[in-house]
Length: 157
Image (tube, rainbow, N blue to C red; front, side, top):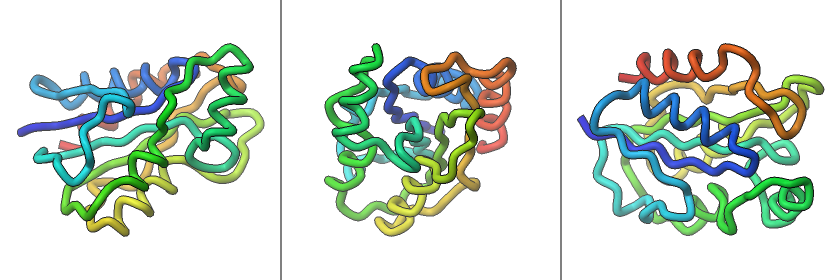
């Protein structure tokens, strides 16, 4: 089985969850930052997992990434939103996750927005979108979230 985890991270929390997900999926899993990700329609994997931070009630935008950089983050130039916008149709099995601030627990999630776009492109969801919690808007992850991400990934396969 071949697995690919594509993630976007500004403060390192989503990358940490993506690493835990990759570990949970096991040997042969490729982990790639969205800036280095191949086009969605060119992928030939058994499962694609897409992860992103929740910014302003959904997936990041150039303005929210600029704001994150102004607060000490290191966001990519291109986010999951743009990667999906550039995609052609795909018939992959996918799962999505996001990192989300616990307090305040604001509405909207990047994982649900990404799942909606992936379904529109022809992908099939392997699981419901999942949230992983961070302290405040910069993190770190809440205790146990990396372990929960690893366990969640094991359930995908």
